[in-house]
Length: 334
Image (cartoon, rainbow, N blue to C red):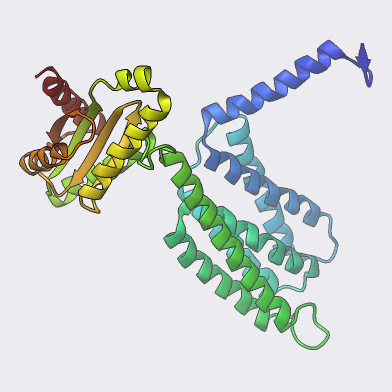
C-alpha cells in the first residue's frame, strides 16, 4: 500500500523515527530546557522576518541578526545535543524580552513589533509563572509589565490617531497579569496532584522525599533537630484478604487521618507505598519523636510498627529513611 507516494512501511518507519527523536530529547534534557529552547526558536524566527524589511534601522537589523544566531544556536544545542539549560536562562530570556519590548514600544516606529509585544507578553508571563513559582514570578513580571506599559504610554504609538490607546494599554496589562495568575495556579495544582496520594491525602513518595530534602537543608543550615519516622501497618494483608480492598482502603484513610489530626501542623505525613508511611518531624529530636509515636499508638484503630531516625551531619534523604526503616523493622520483630 502506498500513501501519498510513500509506502506504508516507510511511513511507519518515519513516524517511529520522529517519535524516537522526540523521546530522546525528553530523556536527555528537561521540560524547562525544551520549552525555553522553543521560545528562543520562536524569537529567532521573528528575527528572520525582520531581516527582509526595508524600513528598519541599522541597529534593528543588527539586533535581529544577532537574535537569530543566538536563538538558533541555543535551540540546536537543546534539540540535537540534549543540553540542559541553566535555570538563570529563563530569567535572562524574560528580562531581555522586556528590554526589547521597552525599546520597540518607546523608541521605535515599528508598528508590527509593537503589536507583537502585546501578543508575546502574556506568553512570557505564563512561562515564568510555570517554571519559577509565585513569589519570583509576581515580582519580576510586575517590574516588566510596569516598564513595558510605561514605555507604551510615552512612546510614539499613543495619542490621538495612534496605534495604542489607554484602553489597549490597560487591557494588555490586566490580561498579562491574568495569564500570570493562571500559570501560577496551574503550577500549584500540578505540584499538588503530582506530590499527593489520592487515597489518603498524604504526600506520596516523591512529594515526601522532596519535603524531607528541603527540611534537611534547613535543619543543617540552622543547627536544628529533625527526625523522620517510618511506619508500617501490621498484618495489613489480612485485612484485604478477609474483608476486601474497600476495608483496606478505609484502614489506610483512618490511620492517616489519625496521624494528621493528632500531630502538629508542621509535621508531614507521607505514604511511601502500599501500607508503608512516614512522618517528617521538624524541630524534633529522637526522644520527642518517640514520645509522640507512643502517644499516637495508644489511639490506633489498627496496629502499626514504627522506627525513628534523627538527622546527623552528612545525612541524605536516603540515609535518613534507611536508618528509620531499620529501626522500624526492629520494632516489628519485637
